[in-house]
Image 1 (cartoon, rainbow, N blue to C red):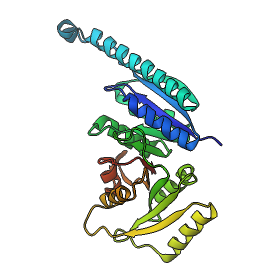
Image 2: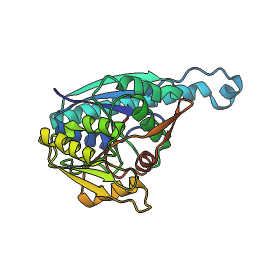
Image 3: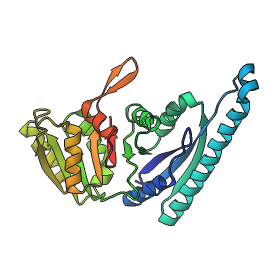
Image 4: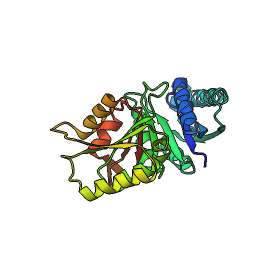
Length: 278
């Protein structure tokens, strides 16, 4: 079965960088995957404000923003199709429009019918970070987040899998199987002073990887007062990994999510491609 990656080509307020598309194509080639790219175009309703129209020609600005968004969408889809053809990756192009206030909701809804979502995450971009959180907690799909420095991606053959043996870590483990099955080494990492881990869980995890012929090495790390997310990323740096895999932790609060500590540290200081599942 071919994995299908879903790539939202965001255009508003700022467009996706073309170099990020190249990174997604490289990941698709590694997985033998196809890519569905969606041009996300802004649809701004008419605003009836006579004063604003007289002072700043509001309607003209709205139409100009929509034209710019549409032009970015067409350009990015063209780049995706060209890079896909050059890289031997099957690409499907689609487009949709949404109100600026509901862009994340529209992206989440469209993403649910694909195997995995890939989202480049520019540094200090709160809009993109909000989209990432919406996808991770709302799409029901694994989300591969790419930091801005990944072009092309690093060594995808070395994977760090962060696990506390809970539900979301288990979900992430199975969602990451397309990467695990192509890996030269998977480090199954547990931060031991965050949560007690039974020997039975360790044994079961080893049996799972061995059944699938996945080369893995169990690793136990102590945080010693350092945030667990930093400990994990530091270990990934040391191993030269091209991918981290982890479950995402959040606590529902009036239909919004408050990120768990590890998730928050990694998401807002992204140093490696990270596959998150919830």
